[in-house]
Image 1 (cartoon, rainbow, N blue to C red):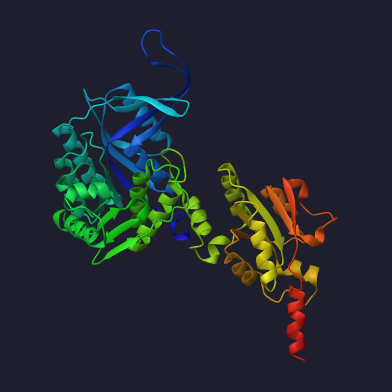
Image 2 (cartoon, rainbow, N blue to C red):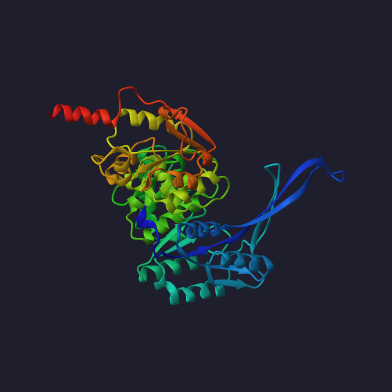
Amino acid sequence: MKSFKNVNSNILVIGDLMIDHYLWGSCERISPEAPVQVVDINKETTVLGGAGNVINNLVALGANVSVSSVIGNDTIGEELKAMLEEINVDCKNIITQKGRKTSKKSRVIASSQQVIRYDKESKENIEDSSVNKILDNLVDDIRTYDVIILSDYGKGVLRTALCQGIIGLAKENNVKVLVDPKGSDFSKYNGAYLLTPNKKEAILATGIEIQDDKTLEDALLKLKKECDLNISLITLSEDGIATYDGEVKVFPTVAKEVFDVTGAGDTVIASIAFALSLGKDIEETARFANLAAGVVVGKIGSATVSIDEIEEYEASLHKSTSDAHIKSFDEINKIVRRCSGNGKKIVFTNGCFDILHVGHVKYLQVAKSFGDILVVGLNSDASVSRLKGPTRPVNPAEDRAYILAALEAVDFVVPFTEDTPHDLIKMIQPDVLVKGGDYKGKDVVGTEFASELKLVDFVDGKSTTKTIQKIQGSQC
């Protein structure tokens, strides 16, 4: 995952921009004027919607994002541009069309239940002059983009002439065009690099009822042929992502908990575009998109995901290498702050873990059972020598950390150089501090920084010292 960090990715999003507007309140009475609820509004929020949610996801991943679209010459349009500029999105290619209404969808929420939604927008196709302005701007800038996303919400921006003009220019300049399609007729996207329809959209577009591996392959092949795609792709919700690039491959989803699928499609196309912009192949791209979707469906509402969150999620699934679980002080500080903010219970323990044995493993499994995230502080070689004597450790810190990080119970390993983990515990402020049962009745370093102390008995007869003695005895 480190190859996804601190990179230079330039992505252009073209599509239907809108504002999602929420009025939050409570309802305790019925209107005397009509049989309708009266909602007392206590909070009002706005977020970017439509193609704007794709943009939010790209920004969260670390891409440099530009946007091209058509809005109205109205106050909503000005509000929308200000929201984009606030997250450092290049808005110079947003066209204002006289008489057009910028999309704004307002929802009234009473006691977590949506009561009504009312929309203010234009849905007719944009004018020819707007199409020409977008294409003229693209001619000047296209070589600056790694990938172009067409985010179609059916509000009239991505009409056929514009889609085909963009795809033609992109092909001439070897720039990939990815499309989140709308409707049942995908012909206006012909020649794109790939489309990201979900299963239902693919069924409508191909006329093939996807029920098994055979019909899935038929649908993928039909999309590829009829839309002249480089790669054919269908998202399968909880079943993952299917692709055809010479052969059919299905990449299973990796979601642990699903709270809300709102905006998951936007996250998928944003993460696919981001990975492809970095030169990743379709297999690594699909796996990355699945991880991103796995994070975002575990959040409430339209959400975004960062590379750090994806890395942490991958580590929690133990699908990553041990290196991904070994963190510095600064890295673990950011991780625990984020995890605590998401309601995760942090558990901390520490030790030398010189020659790993069953006692260590069972101890760590019990420690993990006390919370959601287990962080293990690991003594450096110098501190082990000071604690255990000049012949220890047997294994260097790098080896001990790597082996510990491979254990399913361990989420993160943090090496420290001091004799005690006092400073590390102070920084982490764990919910639960775990030590061995031999500390009963003794002072435990860092207790004042933890919400709770748990003592775990060791397995009788299992220790690194006894293992070393046994080895030395067999060598005599």
